[in-house]
Image 1 (cartoon, rainbow, N blue to C red):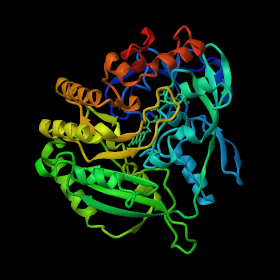
Image 2 (image 1 turned 45 degrees about the horizontal axis):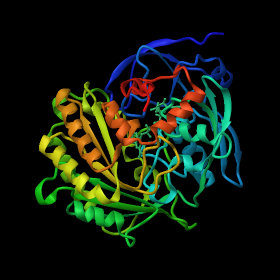
Image 3 (image 1 turned 90 degrees about the vertical axis):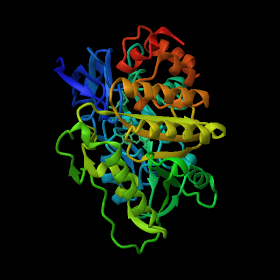
Image 4 (image 1 turned 180 degrees about the vertical axis):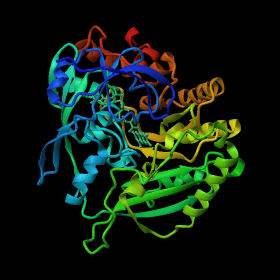
Length: 448
Ligand SMILES: Cc1cc2nc3c(=O)[nH]c(=O)nc-3n(C[C@H](O)[C@H](O)[C@H](O)COP(=O)(O)OP(=O)(O)OC[C@H]3O[C@@H](n4cnc5c(N)ncnc54)[C@H](O)[C@@H]3O)c2cc1C
């Protein structure tokens, strides 16, 4: 039986660009072997730019393939189909004492999407990327058919798929090592940092270190206050006699009901919001208990919050810079944003640990800054080019799962292992059947 294809306008979470794609939604695992090789996998569409788009072609939405296949209660090993979301994993397994070993800032992400973008969380400096906790995957490749890949079996294909943005095949199922936790509570400490140097000092200070750390930056602050932020550190509480905690929710608390008019988000409104946020959170000087959702997923509380940026959408710019150039590079980026009055809500600064083995995996040792910028056409494109120049000068890179603008040349300069990745692509898909809007924009098929 041929699966029905529905033509529709699709976008990533940033709602820019919007492109026409044919969408398949299989609900049986067996369907994956029958899907044509030029069909790009897509999860919950939480990548921001064009990595889950295939303009004029087809995508296979994996969200109905979300069955749990096995769970080892003693070891915490979960075997599941790749369309299962992190929200579903948390909802089912947290009450049994198991949590995700690594989680991004939203839980509305599929297991397959988490591998394809090799996502990182607030604990990258200690726990590495999502892929570090994956025992194996089952991959449906265009040329070699169905393969089990792991760090031991077909390791090259495994590491090219980790961070490979769906371009080596469809991940159908996987085994993930969950992490034991003995309560649903986090203990959190906030430290206000008056300017960027203090934020960097806190992120690198062993005294302030914790399993999970992040700094929320007010990126409209200028002059002596440039980079003012709230540094947040958290760890799981382990005592047994804690009050009952709210279980994680698999649905947002409220919804943004419609597209906000484009003038709503301007430097005045964002500055006012950031000021209130800084003062409110900066007051919390003593450690306090937090439920998991507000600590790990504050943005998930508002469903469709991406509508706040209006019809034209927004782009997220996430870069990482090595320790030696990070301070100057982050400062230069914040100066650009601030001068352009490109109203970005609070930006996020995190420390990253050593790079993993994924050829195109984003995280490398250093500091990563993530900024949301409303899309305003050529003005935004020009700003992004200036930001790229700063990142290239500092020897850093941009995260592909957030990207919608990078040039083929900048991509090659930022990802020196691309040639190695191409060697694996030549094995699993020599004809380049499987492409995406991102792979075409970066002219990946043309070689290194
Ligand atoms: C609010 C928010 C916060 C975020 N925070 C973080 C963060 O802290 N850290 C971080 O690393 N990322 C973060 N992200 C990005 C997000 O985690 C990644 O983009 C993730 O890949 C999205 O997963 P998805 O299931 O929505 O996949 P999609 O966005 O649908 O697809 C992303 C890529 O994965 C591929 N893919 C999807 N499913 C499969 C599959 N089954 N087999 C093979 N390839 C597949 C697609 O082809 C595409 O290239 C955040 C995103 C949002 C919206």
